[in-house]
Length: 176
Ligand code: SF4
Image (cartoon, rainbow, N blue to C red):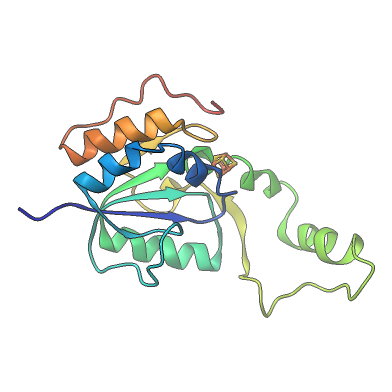
């Protein structure tokens, strides 16, 4: 029987959700017993595969690069999981939305800088007008809230998915 494949990605997030993923500790061995981890910032794969069964997506969609990535990932993924509050609600990245892109960039790269002020348009992915939750851009199949989601919630949800069940996330809440 072919083993299911699992990927994890981050968009505009702080990596805290992935740290919680690592906090599964020895239970990570159970996960890799049940699935092949084929792409993740935690491992050294360079290309997102053509087909992935399950993908955890951390972070909001904030830049043109994020937008390109999430559309490509959606096309190639069976079950897409919005992983953590930034993916589910835009959360911290969304705090910039009322400010507007240009004032934000000016504040970060010009007003608060004493050496070589200037917005690095050539090397930093261009920001979208708003940071958006993943489901506002592509279809999401499963939501794992939390900032970050607990290792217990991640583990139980992944085991459920890999064993063909719908995860029970009713106890999970924004911000916990
Ligand atoms: S949900 Fe919290 S822990 Fe996860 S990326 Fe956002 S700020 Fe970081």
